[in-house]
Length: 190
Image (cartoon, rainbow, N blue to C red):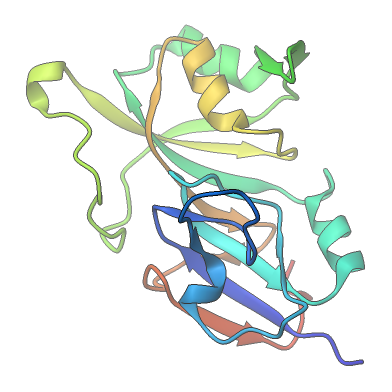
């Protein structure tokens, strides 16, 4: 069987699944295009997160990409302006809760950035300038615990207001519009 691979710009409000067995109406990835029935998301982005999601029919490839071998870069809009100490804490690792246990995150790279002008407008109004300043950070990690980036920024007093994954390994989101996907021959660019 020849496996198929896709790059998808997951929009806000979709869950990173093709099937949903719980009660309730959820927006699923299958609504965003024609994918083979055995397609799976490599890793996940929660319903309120957006950005780069890799899709494949190859379970072994999915396992490899989820490993600590590849960097994952996120742009996080945070509540406040980070100081040097908060950046240092994020870079050296912070304690977050994972399944009721304390977990020290692995070292990361963090820097202030301007968001790309190609980001779609926010679908949900979170706040306005009356609530104080906000800023964008690039956060690069090599792991992917449940809601990790959101928990990391909250742990240093900078709650995440918007989260967009922009890169996995060498594969970048670039100008792919929200909700669009492209098929690629393989993930050799990683």
